Amino acid sequence: MSSLLVRPGLRLLGQGWQWNRTWPLICTARPIVDMSYSHHFVDFKGSSIPTSMKKLVVTQLSPDFRKAVTLMPNVPVPIPGDGELLIRNRYIGINASDINFSSGRYDPSVKPPFDIGFEGIGEVVALGLSASKNFTVGQPVAYVKSGAFAEYTIVSADIAIPVPLVKPELLTLLISGTTAYISLKEFGYLSEGKKVLVTAAAGGTGQFAVQLAKHAKCHVIGTCSSEDKARFLKSIGCDLPINYKSEKVSSVLKSKFPEGVDVVYESIGGEMFDTLVNCLATKGHLIIIGFISGYQTQAGMLPVRSSALPSVLLRKSASVHGFFLTHYMSEYKEALMALVKLYQSGKLVCEVDYGEQSAEGKFTGLESVSRAVDYMYTGKNIGKIVVELPHLVNSKL
Image (cartoon, rainbow, N blue to C red):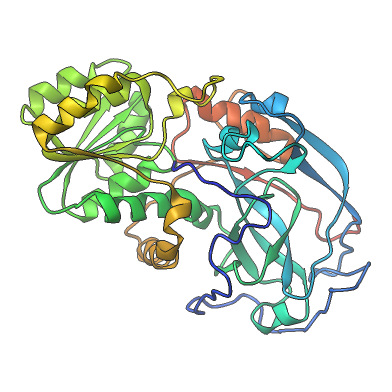
């Protein structure tokens, strides 16, 4: 995925920016519940919202996620201010950049402790008075904001995203989907017949890059690490999956595409980056959305033969573009709405990996977040890794 900078309190979607209501709401009643100054409140199911909750906090900077974070079992449930929502998180997304955030790479000035987790989806359980203008208790919402790895999260009403249902498939679009959509729109220059290669093609972001390139009538190649992933890629339209565990990527590309590929969608880094730069066609484009192969190292990246890069690019009139989602938030709303439309029309697969094939089974509860991060770095996931946060909503907590 694209490296994503989310600082506590940073409004990624823009000051005062509002969503048009194009989706039906589940709740018909719209009670105004002013929680701005309350110290006891009741959620829409009629059960008491607890006074304390669990959340993950970065307590030391480290690329080793398990060392970096601590599960806090008794943190006060925050009280929403006038323009804020209290969201009970139902599903939270795992991103490769979680360990970049926990290691302090995005902002060296930030010192522990600080909250972590980029994205969540759940229900509004309490809200401030002015927030009730556009939201209601019980309404499903999604968000991109630091602090998602918690049972409850405060979200400003102007960045909350109303959704029709609390579905993890919609969560996959918030960062992974929009990263693929915006970066390809800005730097892919896609058109019918172009050859597009996607690395980590069966992953959370790769799955969308593959499908969006196919929607543009491109010939799509996808690298992956297993036959199960290759079959999945075939199912979403990938023309040529390459299992790099059993095939040499450079040899396959040289044999099948001697003139090179037009677009490379790159998230691996290191040796894979070197290989694919050399496989670019004349006037080809390589888009960097990450370099996951190095994230777990102390330096954060693996070395590449960058000294040869100017020569390679010059000979081919080729280009390399970096993409950082935070720099393109002006495009975010349009991207997300387009993706949701594709999903709702059945033209976009949003594959979710709950960890059911992992050694200890499905990722459930905040206790499983570290395990989910580890699972991502084994490279076994197919689709976006999601953790479910169950809540006892029909009894006092």
